[in-house]
Amino acid sequence: MKILRPGVDLDTFFAEVRGAPRRGLLLDYDGTLAPFADDRMAAWPYPGVRELLRRLIQAGGSRVVIVSGRPVSDVLHLLRLQVGCEIWGVHGWERLRDDGSDASMRPAPEQRDALRKAQALVPAALRGALEEKSASLALHWRGTTPDARQRLEQQMRPAWSALAQREGLELHGFDGGLELRIPGRDKGLAVRTIAEELGPGGALAYLGDDLTDEDAFRAMRGHGLGVLVREALRPTEADCWIVPPEELLAFLERWLHSLPPA
Image 1 (tube, rainbow, N blue to C red):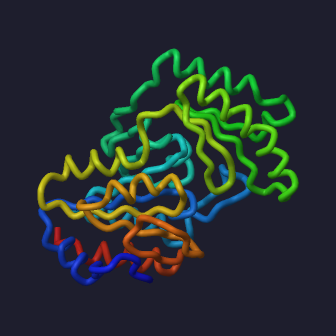
Image 2: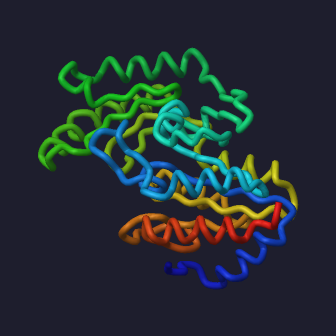
């Protein structure tokens, strides 16, 4: 583990976790809890992660929340926890509470129409790389050659960028593709919402790897600990950096052992 921000001390943080009246552990999925996979529906968690999450949830004493760019249904399929877990999907547009109730937000009809226009710009030959979500479109190129990736990006970025400007959408790169998103919600919203629900004195941590997690790291300021989880360090707003899977598992174990007895 490497501390990235002066004044951050892990011993002090976990002491605060132990003494807090309420706790929230927020976790990105791809690249954080699971390694990337060419087949995005085969991106299974690192060995040991599923078992640790199950123990954390069953122990009580903290809210365990998955915050992903994936749809909630994808996360449920890949995690297979068989215990209640809160999940935020599609960068904050979808929300499944741990009791199974749906608190998702629906984009306006004109926003969905804008995404349909963007989908129509994708040539038939590229449709297999396109993922349609409730509030975004993602073009995936993980597993392709560098030349193929360059051709995909050169073909689609200008067209989607022009449409985004006309229709009020946002174009974002991510680790493995390009995403056109309806604005107004991001992973930072999940952080702010959970922090508000925990109330004063709550202890909070967010673990993530990708550029889309930077919204969450910025929102964590003043609320808790932002943890970058990836093999190589990059510029980030996170407070510290850990390398998966060993340091990830160690962090989750330490969180578990910081919980007060049930």
